[in-house]
Image (tube, rainbow, N blue to C red; front, top):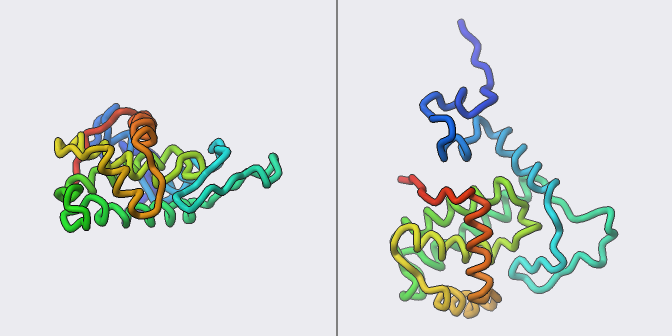
Length: 188
């Protein structure tokens, strides 16, 4: 009887993956690798002076400089999952704002982009709400079903959140850099 060893690299876990491909960059061989990637991103985060998370302006200035806020991999995963659940209500086929209603490909692509971005970046460094809106905006361009940044900004404002058109555009660039400009997504 052979024993199964835990693969340490992507090419061992997924033999059909070509070296240097997008799959090699983002497929992780195990759940432990995913947790490790999130822990590393959280440890390397650079706290920003005001991190609103769409919940008001909470600043880190009251915290001692030696102890910046940190999250476990599970906590960051829970926050990312919370924001990803908002996708369908913003741009899915049954979205309340009919001007933003798009096929599922947009929300699926935005979800993949956001998850890939937060594999190497901490949610404490980049506001998840702004990154979510930027992911929707970028996904609409990638899938050739453009959504106006002004319409997105107005819709988010109707939800009592603040994301300006300038925020969307600047965070779109950060998102592209965070996924190494690998914009082609394959999903069911």
